[in-house]
Amino acid sequence: MAKQLVLILGGARSGKSRYAQDLAPKLGSRVAYLATAEARDDEMQSRIANHRAERPADWQTLEAAQNVGASLARVQADVVILDCLTLLVTNVMLAAGESDQQSRVNDEVVKLIAAYRAGNFSLVIVSNEVGLGIVPENPLARAYRDLLGAANQQIARVADSVLWMVAGLPMRVK
Image 1 (cartoon, rainbow, N blue to C red):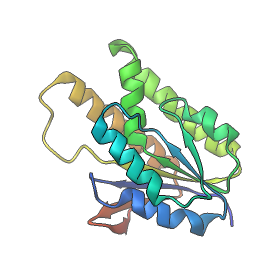
Image 2 (cartoon, rainbow, N blue to C red):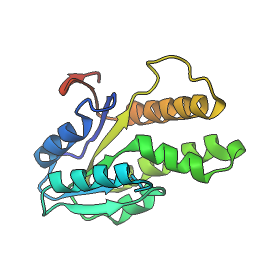
Image 3 (cartoon, helix red, strand yellow):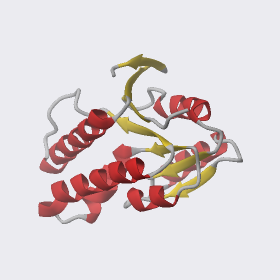
């Protein structure tokens, strides 16, 4: 099977990660899970533990809060789930200076795409669509919405398929 890039978008708790985990074994037998979450509080630690428990034991697990392109360059798998672009953008923004956020997020996404293109694996990227609600009231939240929206668009342009999750059901966008 030829490698492919799949972007799975949706709201919080829409079934994105579950769908990615169900899809990955259909794209290849050796699956790697690249997690971008950082356990900054008890609630996030619990979420991470729950996600780990849901994954098959034979899946390779990688963790990279940033610089996922470097992790992808080292992966030994047929398919990689990157879960999620949403937190990757958060991590890059928090590490960057306020004036450098846009270039740092763009650079991260460009390197992610380059690593996929150079690799020999399918890539399933999970991301939230946060631009459907009201305009956020503070500058950081507006910048986050804008940068994540731009990152989602960059990935969608090069993706072989884009899926939109609604109540656990996938809708094909591309």
